[in-house]
Image (cartoon, rainbow, N blue to C red; front, side, top):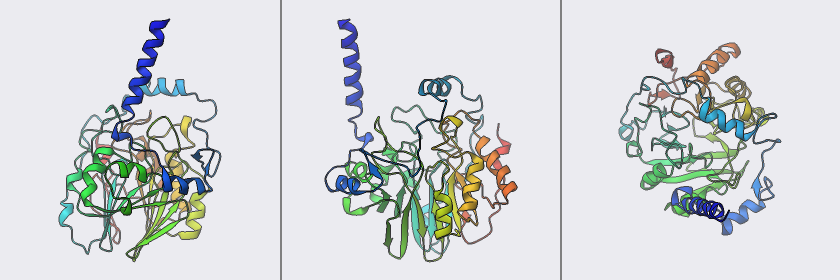
Length: 362
């Protein structure tokens, strides 16, 4: 019995020491914590969703979910061939171009009206603190070193597949301004970012910088880099440039906020919404592909870019199931959709014709 207690104590200590590493970030303190405590969305020590949002759906259990994740994944959870990519020199783009490049999963770069935005960049090839969630072969063609100067770094929340320590550290000299949710700045400060360069927003708060306006909006999700959940705020955002109106979706389950945002701020020239890494067991926090299309319609999207797929396997489905279902539903609901190859140049102000490239892979 004594040996058992000692072993447990050693394991707990090892986990504690591991979680003190810089990659886990930092807890909000001081004035940052005071702002969080004053938020109407922060209750009982955590941020809450607008609607009741259980961690797992009715009838699901964590042991069953974990068993299925490790032992019952699809045999096609990852593509058998490398993901195709197109490589552009992002450091020498014409400032006159209004363009977007998708890097797989939820990472993308936008140049609009001469300003640059980089969203949720993960360029380390991994989406886990222990290195066990590897990027698909071919999907990591772009690196932090390939990025130009970044006017706005948008971070929707602090999950590992959206906030990558190695990437954020390498981007530090290139980033002028960070836009994120309440509390997330604590991680960035620990990693060397100047607090004066970080703008943290609560839902419905806005910030106008050099004529470009960000309006933080709800997302139905959660946050956390360790065992504690919802210690920082998860957001989506309306981004208004002089010429364009875009919606940056982050991660979210389906809820009433999409229709409200569409009514108040739509139509949008482009909306970017997640369509992968879903399961009925956690459908409250990740949309099904068909809901992705319905959300785009409610947002009054002129064009939809489905993301959160083609780089990491974080669910049980086939790697290409999300986009197949999304494309089929888009046709059904007559929602314009763009499906670029990773790194392909997409124009914000021109018609884009993108092939269904994934159908050529196994």
